[in-house]
Length: 442
Image 1 (cartoon, rainbow, N blue to C red):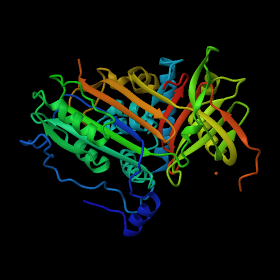
Image 2 (tube, helix red, strand yellow; image 1 turned 30 degrees about the vertical axis):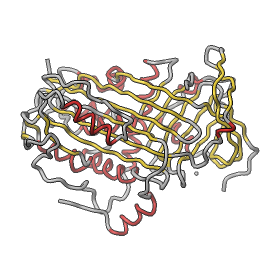
Image 3 (tube, rainbow, N blue to C red; image 1 turned 120 degrees about the vertical axis):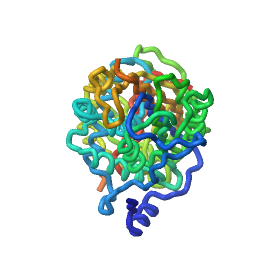
Image 4 (spheres, rainbow, N blue to C red; image 1 turned 135 degrees about the vertical axis):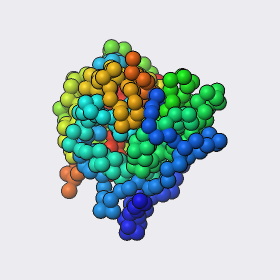
């Protein structure tokens, strides 16, 4: 049954979050590929590769009284994001890292709808879902999607999902319907024996990410019968753009003690700023109202990024977010661009999801005799005078078993050594991206 926000609710969302598109800079995340052998109710076949399933389309069935996601979901996503980031750091210590915890969280929430028994329990623990039931998770994700999208006239953020099914294979109808209802996922049939099928999926991803992610599927193996794709697209410019004439080469000091000349952007103004004995931190907003910001945490010269990471967790993060206050200052920030990729199997196993990768996995709510064989994550990010451009892709492969602000002195923040950064939605607290930049590249 279709359910909509009241007119007052719709007007509120339009006034508060806006619908116009921004001008520059794209953040795109194409995330999650699910592949597997699944049996249950068949997706309605069609001669068109983009045919929808026979089940009726419906809007996210959000309770009329629900205008904000359950805070427990935001908390869960934040905890999961920092746990995952911590494990990624272990694998790629000393390297540039950039991941999208929101992308991975959405991907695994959709996958969670197919889990049963002990596999559902270990996924709930790893994803911090233990205080949430499936209805709360799905309804809150549906509301969160509405709040995140189109947050500002100069910022665009959209989330799209799709399921691409082998037209010859049947699937659990409840699993399909929940993903359609709560995640507004498109369900389409494909001939997986056709060599053009990967291109059809990749074209959809490219369209939804405005060409920032061009390929998520290399090829379709004989045992792969379902692809579940999530795409996040963000386009925004700084609230106050950097003057390109102020950009010049300055030294950046590496962890090794070496230095390199690097293009640095400079700017003075009023910023939300926080400083303690360990680090300086600043929030650089995007768009007209700054609902989304780029956060930079720079360890003090007598400290290090490694020491900072020992205190980086969800509890401290939430406390730090309340400590920022408006202050005049000067910031110098490196322009940087990077690509990053990692297989997340070990990181997810380390935080408790190991069973989902084993022959003891139970995804019976999705289909029969399935397990996750690989979770792959790829990202791209570029930060310059105009804004931020980034992309992320996560693939989950399923196979058969075998805060009155005080008046303060102006600060100076010279980001000339390794730092931590994050892109955060300030309305909901959702962390869209986070990264460790130890050696900026241009």
